[in-house]
Length: 280
Image (spheres, rainbow, N blue to C red):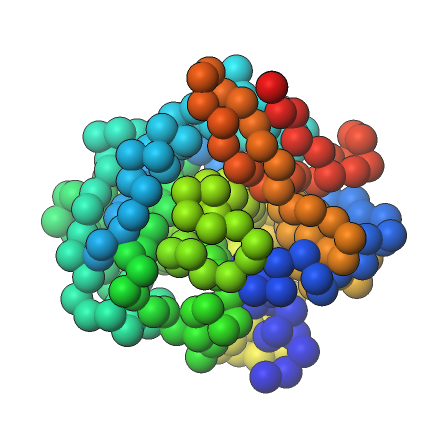
């Protein structure tokens, strides 16, 4: 796999290295590029197969996206106001098989659900897909739990003539990699992908352009990126990726109401550091 494709894949995913591949001393800065964001993100969870921790994740999404969530205050630096959980948009979907591919199975599933009216996307819609432990995924030839634990991407739905041309989604594996396990890992991965989908929702379109066109497509691909670190050569240049590296712990605990959740730390341009407001 050539370097640029590796770069773009790294941009979108949680690496199984889990805080072992980036430098802790580099000075980062997220720059605003031409692409759009999800300024008032609406979270529509999809549970595929025998997905676990569903009630815990729904509770997490409801609390983390509220106006009282200190975790969200970092995202407000990048124009992302507190979002909301669309509980009516929650879906449980039967997995067609245990080995699935992003382009061949996941994207057609989303397309079909929109056609059927089960999903009603708008310009702020985000679809985190939580997988059961029995499901494995391939994504641009890479295999889950070998190369990635979760990723976010984009689906082109212009053919459906909806009010929004694209939707942002994430694929989140069950207990795959990292130092956390169970519900803690689930909410850490969920917050990581939520933050990056909100600040860089069309990154999947950029990746797909480059994958199809190669280096000649880089200029066209770049216009879809929104917030990304151009200050260093770190290929993991999104808001949560910048908080992973040797000697760094990329997550913390936050207290929301009477609940405590593990969440991803986020890069703050204002504080020039990875931060999380615990509320505890």
